[in-house]
Image (cartoon, rainbow over all chains, first blue to last red; front, top):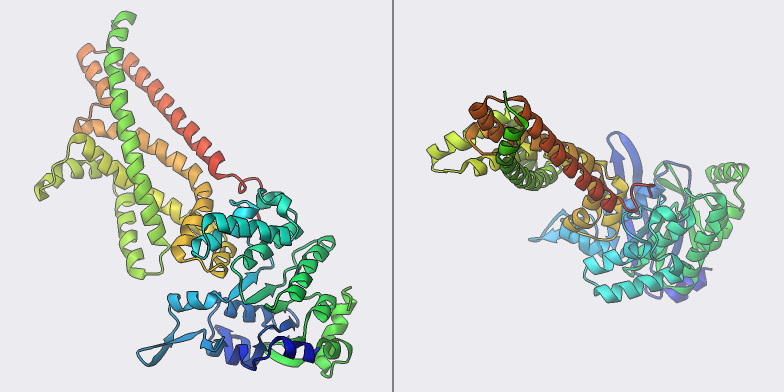
Length: 271
Length: 222
């Protein structure tokens, strides 16, 4: 598995780097002195109990949350600060917009625009961000919907789609801007069990057919095991254990990891 | 005692007042709508100065009587060099007043659109204005419309106040007829029916807008 990643991402420069990142809401510390990095093309699974900070990491990268301290570096550029007049200042909206271009995000609750059809949901951002003409955006959106198996639902409003279909539209929408890094935030948690597979199949295809860097926050341990090159196990805003999925899932070293996996299996999730 | 024939005679005179009432209603609704949108959006701004100035506008025009505002527009503005016709004064006062009420409706509707929608626009790298125009407003409008329908009717009924500054609208014309013929029942019954008709037309229009903007949103949520 490690070799496979190395061949895919020859440069050693990490695409994402967290340096001593802290995040707190008032007195509640969500992330504590967190440092880790992600290589370009890597498929990372973030697992751990609720409230352990996994989702916060994705939200910080998508600039939905700011950090309290520390730095987040993306493609060698600081996300939360910028240089202005030789000084480091908090990021302006313009800087954040430049940085966001690298990311696409898929949310737990889809967050589709209910007043727009599936096609309009996918085509909106490429047109508005000026990356494509209207006709080209429509064409790409149709292609994206076809890739997720929903070409026939292009003109339906989200309210007429099943949960699994909504999430596949949301994936197509995130991909329409051709991000380098895809953030997947518990994308199957809001789905009925029988709809989970169709969404995971789309992600598996993406994993195998693109060189996107992907960060997956999930409670689907079986999927995390097949999907990831590396797994980070979080608890209380810290990385407790990290390693290849075979090691984390089959022979974890840390007692906390073991007890978490036992609970997950007892709750009916397969490994 | 007045007969049915004389009632027919002055009916036409009263009906000419309906034109002024409709004109006053439409123009002040338009002004109120524009002000409500601008002020409502300003009330959700991050800039405290923008919010403060808007809040002052809203509280002044909600907190004082439209009657006083109308007289101020017609009788006081000339002292600062602004002379408006009775109709213009009516539109200005009713529009500013309606806009202040509408601003609160717009603010509440914008806030009612879920945070998840805003986050999706950030994840898609839209600017704030793009997000507002393409994603937030179209959904918020659906929440606004029922209240806007009420405000439009309130405003239409409020146009009667403009009779006090000699706008020849329905109420003014009815007063003239009453003064000249001594008949009270018929002219006021007539304008009552006309007000009701205008209100029904307004409501039908708002219902149509609700259906049009509600596509995809009203039946179920995403």
